[in-house]
Length: 143
Ligand code: DQA
Image (cartoon, helix red, strand yellow):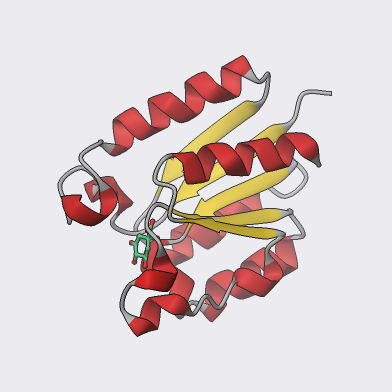
């Protein structure tokens, strides 16, 4: 059966292509989403993509997809490092979740090394730019 994947870009990812280009690259979120959609189509998976800056709205999006998707791929932006709200949601919703990051969070400021959601996710992929999302899709395909 065709797999369904919910993809969420968290706070400030709308600014990719403008913000800190030396870290996140020059490519816009719109282009990132096109690459993701093309890859999903090629691999026969359905993707539904959101970008949301508000923590509570992210929780609403995730909970409204319970039973409707097979996987969640989320780049939670800075929420990664402190949001127990997001952690509880991921744990509680039961959707197998992959945490992704464009940058290498292990090689930046110390506060970025910690993810409060990592251990409620099935995998954490970081530092590969757009390929972090594509490798996450690959992982969903293998599961
Ligand atoms: C990010 C890394 C986070 O630390 C940061 O707050 C972001 C983007 C990444 O994709 O590399 O907003 O999640």
